[in-house]
Length: 111
Image (cartoon, rainbow, N blue to C red):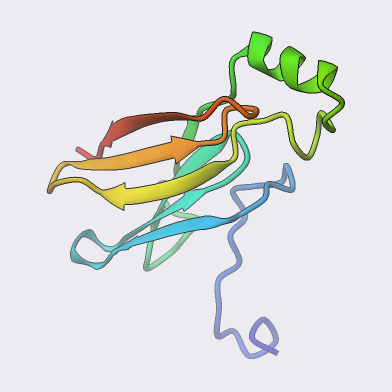
C-alpha cells in the first residue's frame, strides 16, 4: 500500500539480501545507521538512496573457518552480524558485531 500511494522510498542500496537488525537514528544530522551482516550503512533520512555510505566489516577469515569447523552454517551464522550501534559522543558511534562467534567492537567516526 505504501509503495502504491508513493508514501515511501524503498532502500535500493542492498541487493545482497542483508539481514537488517540494528538501527540508530541520528535526527540532529538527518541520518540513519543500519547494522547488517558484514556491513554498516549510513543513510540520509530524506532520501535513503542518496549519498549512501557503506562500511564493509566482515569477520576475520580464520574466525569464519573456525565457525564452520564447529558445525555452524556459513551463510547464516559465520559472519559479522552488527548487533550494537550506540552513540559514544558527538563525533563517534560505538559498534559491535558477532565476529563469527568471536565478538569485536570499535568506534566509527561520523565526520
